[in-house]
Length: 253
Image 1 (cartoon, one colour):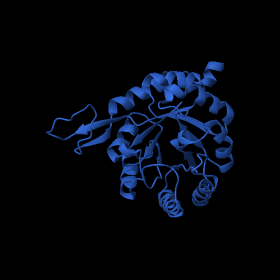
Image 2: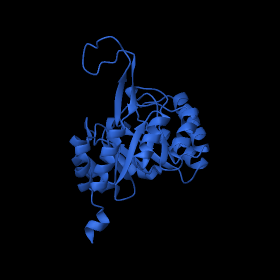
Image 3: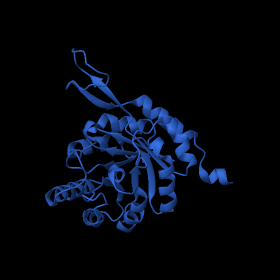
């Protein structure tokens, strides 16, 4: 089973590499659901990980829904091109139609543009799929578009609650598309994801740093002087949980 960590800094990238993660989803503004990282962040993160893991930047030009205008799509296509030219292993993207279906035209344009730059690039469709009408029905579409994997909570608020849907998606994918469980994923969920046959899990492994003298009025309140960092302990525990899973090939012997 592969472990992917969402990180928002070069330090977070280094922590993920140090603790044995297989991939990072590099982004900014996790509190907004994640946005496209800067080229400076990409370059420094690459220096920090030194080829110890794969880097997959998120390409998302704004927070909010996943229904994009023509100019927003063009922005993301150009951002993706610049990221891929700098040697990333893949890019992360997702777009929906107002109806809730996957935006086939936008996704095809994005995929074709990315693969024209690097035919070996991995394409991940992100959790926009959990806002779609039917994640299971989207599998065939994503395969036809050339996507490598999809990140999903199974349409549930948290991946643990979407386990049955994730398992069904994995069956439908039949090895042609990697189903990666993520979104509210708990460390205790990892063994059940493995037993369901999923081959990858995704965590933000984030913790908040507060630099504020004021008393927040509620737990987790954002007073404007807090930000997210990658928790080394959480990444380490996630890697231990992944390592504890029995490889399917060995289990079959």
